Image (cartoon, rainbow, N blue to C red):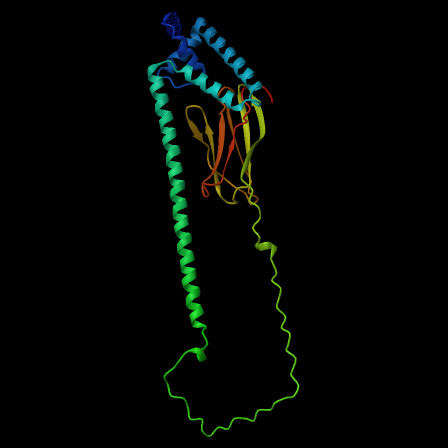
Length: 290
């Protein structure tokens, strides 16, 4: 018997992992002894069959839930969240889960706080600009006051030798001249156009083996800005590398994930203008074609 055969025999005879551990293993959840479990499943026929059965059940459940996702999106998201909840039966994994969820909520609170501070600073800058403009216009108005209306204490020149010209009175009154008042012209360029909120759709998708590729297309963002796509899962979130918005306010991004590891919500956040964002919830899941 070779050394490899002896190691395989020991793995087959070793203690079988708990069913909850096998379920967490096939769902790619964090495990401390994942390498040992993988080696055991590869050499243990009983555990390998159990994992295959779990995979079939998980795929069937996801296919059934996808059929009602278009009609009940919130209910489907809750079901996926419940599946993830019940897969964590180990106490250590539950602690890690709560810690991850609390970290995500803390990040969301910090993001909201930064947005509020930015709005306050913007309002303060606007008030300062308006006050400066008012003070500048007031000074310019004073500088244009006619000099003849300002009283002076300087002595007037001697006008004794000047004889005023005779006044000629006319018997006919001159008709008053009609002064045309220009009609104000409203420029269409000065009228603010209706703002269009940023949007995001899945513009392409394909399936390769047990993985699905999703292509994200966004529109109506500020040209030249950096946009970050955030994948939100029931327990955590993941940010993709920022992409640049083109001159037409459009951007494209994509990612590949295992068919059982598709996010439930996708966000697109503008890094320069935090108020510009888009959310996508209707996401195809599983390996079945849409």
